[in-house]
Image 1 (cartoon, rainbow, N blue to C red):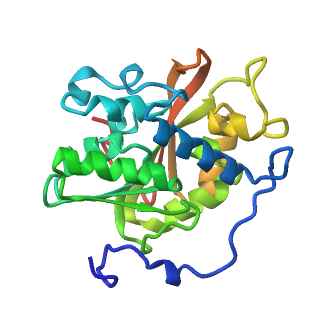
Image 2: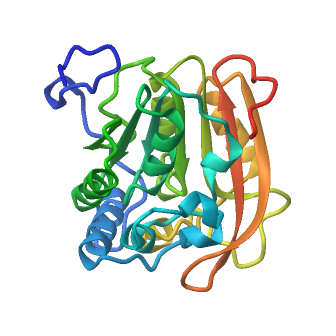
Length: 275
């Protein structure tokens, strides 16, 4: 793929500027982003995830039909972002934090051979896994690249729809990720994000950002209230925000968290965004 393709990736040597530094660190001063990436590298190498929800807990069996079992074993999420939208043939869509590639596969089926699906993940081991999944499924319309989703290897305004499943919850600096999402979207495009969001009040025992450690972020149990999330999305320049309550979901480790789908639009919301 040529570097100057309209919808292409930005070469790494064009991604200039200082590397973001996170304020939240582990007790041994390892940045949260590093600890989380290492956790997911380990899971990819082990061949199974013990984090977040299994796909069978949030997707229907018909949607998962034909997906290799090893992809399901390695996939983690807290919702089904692609269940909240309709994708059209020919669209360019991206997945921030694509993991083992499940949502890439589901999106590729919808946009068809004339569409394009771009997956980005910070874990090289997960990227290799997603590439293997794409190859095994025979999907020629999917590209998977390693990268920091706060400074993704995407050109500005190159994506119609951007989705993310239980990934923003791993970032203390969500505002930077949301700004990157807004920059990647074309005018009229939108993002659909599944994340841990407290719709009513913060439940007793919930992990606050002030008390969270790297393990809490890796498990996506550090939630915001709906109003806090809405403010972050609005501050990132999105004109219209819808937060849909998906209820409580059960993680593989037995934890139960409040899941929500955030629909964020660059411009007016479509009349019927939900399928």
